Image 1 (cartoon, rainbow, N blue to C red):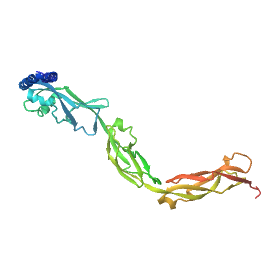
Image 2: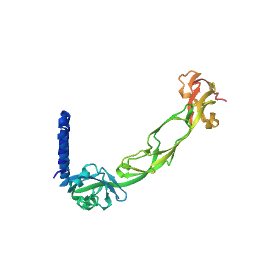
Image 3: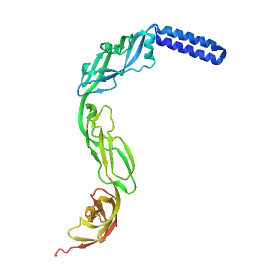
Image 4: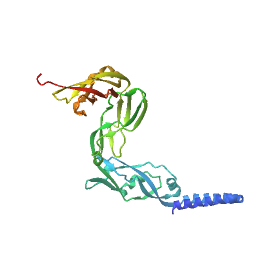
Length: 339
């Protein structure tokens, strides 16, 4: 007999009775007898034997060494069971079932080209599931008749870590050096088809506002499907300092001037202003900058000429660099070849 059909029939009858009592209060007596009769019928129905199908969760464990699961294998099996109604009913009323652990290393292996997998006829699992069912429940059959899983050889390699973040600082505070990540590289492992394309990994995105001191945080590596990280967390250090303004004078150098000419610029130096970390204030000097005018950039064959000053700096950690003047007057003089 179909227990589900009987339960649905009883529910429909009960709903119909409730609807009638709302329409006519005189049916209260009728409803009381209906409920009593239905209850007695239900108790009698539960004493009968039923064959029904339930879903049973499974979990895959003990994969072969250096292999990883691919795709989405079947997470529930359909169990055809037979027992008395009161024994079967809890399985249809949301009874919590502990997943059956399936040892993949005991499955039969299969190979198709570069793809690996394993399978097991579910009839071989009948005893495993029978032991988990309530006393008096007979396991008739398991669907599907064969369970397949697919996996791929696990590959490992070491890749660098990048800090993925948005940093906002308090006024006059800036990042004063390079971000340090410890460790700066992690081992990634997973299917070769995925690992081959990974050149680096990023941390989980994070936002920081109002920073006024060095930031030290432990952050997780951003997750990727089928990929494992070792370690899965790194320490990030962002050096932050107050910055202050500094002004220096840098002499102007002359480049590409023909040997037959000498050049003089007016003025002979530029005023450079910039902001620098307080700890580096006394270490930055005019020697950290190069200001130059290029003879080849002159726009007129007539002398003198007005040339643009170009400023170069290879110093890290300075910001907001400005200089003046942008142009200088240049005077060229011919050198006497007899001298």
